[in-house]
Length: 115
Image (cartoon, rainbow, N blue to C red):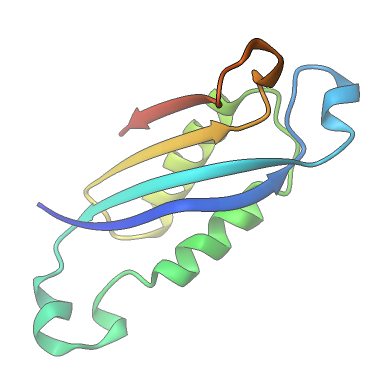
């Protein structure tokens, strides 16, 4: 199956369990794989025959303007909205929160879902 891959999209979002944690935007890193048929655009070389990945990035940034408590909810929200808006067969999303476990010595906390 064909894929469009967006890796390490940095998005600022108000995320966290407490109001204090959500008071400042935090960086999130988003990886997304869109499973779709790319044959038509591969032949036509026409952006209208594919999924515009710039538009997908804009959609992700827009969706992350609201507050979230968990990265699990962010992943599910992105999966549902992007799958609904774009012509894709399947979607895989990984959301990383780099500062979540810094004091514990971990590089990041993440969730990954596939729908």
